[in-house]
Amino acid sequence: MQLRQPIWPRFLPSQMVISFATLGPIGRLRKAPGTWGSAAGLLYFTLFFYPLGIFGTVLFGLAGGYLAVAMCGEAEFRLGKRDPGEIVLDEFVAIPFCFMGWPMIAGVLPNWAAPWAVFVVGFGLFRLFDIWKPLLIGKLQDLPDGWGVVADDIAAALATNLTLHALAFLISRL
Image (cartoon, rainbow, N blue to C red; front, top):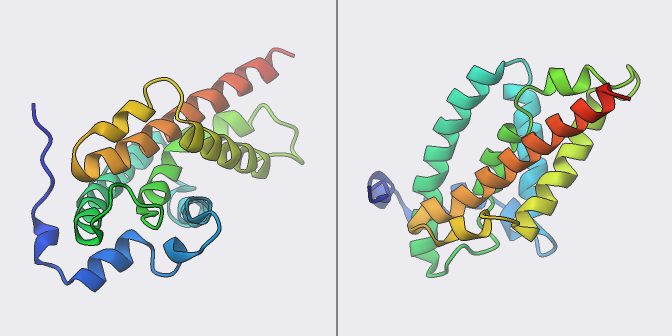
């Protein structure tokens, strides 16, 4: 099966595509645009995904992922760069996947620590996995077009989620 870049963004104005993929001015911040895009993603999660269960997070997260594949791939083409740092929509849409099942994770922590501790640790782990790209996460960037831009971030988010659940399991055994 060959992954294809969605064609519908080709019909949108360049300014719209690039602004969407860079989250407006966020991707143009000189220092650590991916971290700022992730921080915006944490706000996105808190406002829209926080009350959802795993099913809702996966459903809406995949819809956001598809939108990001389309817009990031087209922005890549229009900017003439491969996965440029200013494109941060990929980090933004990946963040909700970090926190699937967060109430189960928070449930093993002391009341004073949950849920903010889950979000702080999850944010840090996501940035670590997104920058370091261990295991096969780095290989996913080789996928064509917007798929490569977004897939590695979704994989980093899933690695974060798995790590958070593993930590919660270990904490519950103490």
